[in-house]
Length: 108
Image (cartoon, rainbow, N blue to C red):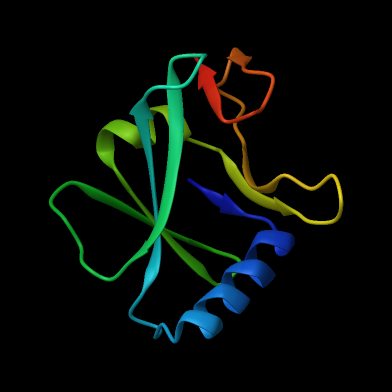
């Protein structure tokens, strides 16, 4: 399962509204090679399903990931932090053994 915190839900709704996106759109999350710790998160809006997509809905937000990425993201919570020292969107990933100083990449 992938989870969505209230803070992320509110920001996603605002972004979708600003971009004029419909209920057909969802959040696509994936893990790719890169970053100083080896793996990085990618997140974007999408409206097309793919083979082997894993589909979750939490807190009224539809989140989709590919099967390979799900192995790294299982039980992860998407969160949002604003303000002067805010991180923006970030992933609270219990599977990550190590993260880089900037929080943009991780290792398992």
